[in-house]
Amino acid sequence: MRVGELSKRSGVPVPTIKYYLREGLLPAGVLTSPNQAHYDDEHLRRLRLVRALVDVGDLSIAAVRDVLAALDTRDDTLHKKLGLVQEAISQPGTGELDPLAVEDVLAFFRRQGEECADVTDSNVTHMLATALSAARSVGHDHFRELLDPYLEGLKIIAQADVDYIATRGSTDDIVEGMVVGTLIGDAVIKAVRRLAHAQVSRKVLSDGPED
Image (cartoon, rainbow, N blue to C red; front, side, top):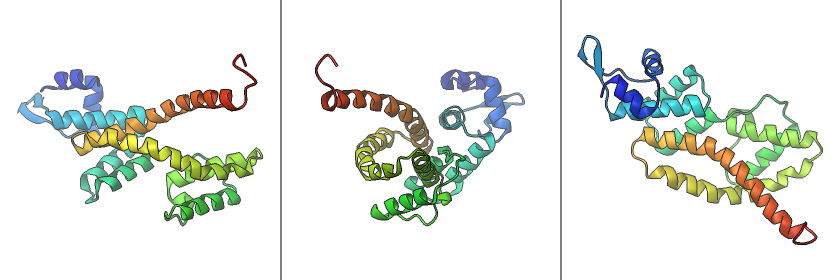
């Protein structure tokens, strides 16, 4: 396909595609003439992944380049590659970490049989420590007690997420599905959680059907 067809099938404007080509995020097409190149389904898959990382993941071009290089060159399992991208799309925040919140995170990981020597070594653990620090700052020191039940409930969601992406074809398709599923899924889970709160609150806290 030519660049116009690639644009039509991906939904990415031609100028943006050419920018990604210049930045090395998209491999060059096969030249069919001095001013024309042919692109195939591999280009389409990579373009969709780049778009997901930039538009949904909100990553910089430099960060996207690093993620793509790691996906292409590392001799790692798909599990490790997905972890790499999860790290890239996780934003830990800039708040000051409460030492007690840090210990809560480390204790949580120990209970779960996971390794975590320093919460700042990972964006994900750093993000959790930032959240618990914020809870402590407003007097909710015992929020840590929700971590284990949260994890058990979220394993059901995680299974659904992995099942959703596992049926996709190439590594690029799987990673794109994970980025979209994680970040858009976060927004969906937030909204559905509000509905769950309303239903449980109605059952547990209301005085009657009209409350």
